[in-house]
Image (cartoon, rainbow, N blue to C red; front, side):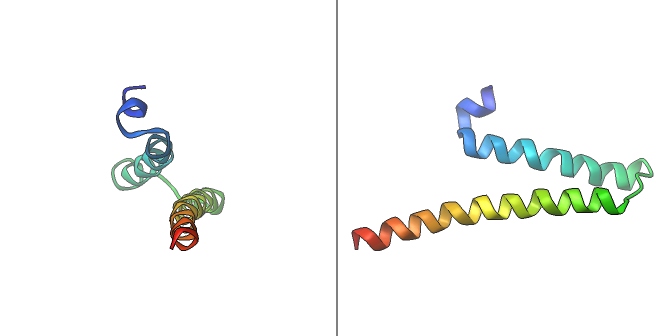
Length: 69
């Protein structure tokens, strides 16, 4: 809740998605984690969703700017 209050809902949600990916990477390096096709697919879906949401925010800003200018 502290993170939510400090940085807002969008950035807090992004952090909640990205931290498990970092945990997987650390487990891969230090704990002999094994990547499987389903795990790789899950990470790709997460990253694609994040890029889509981040890109959508930029698109909204550009669209608003074009309407006002």
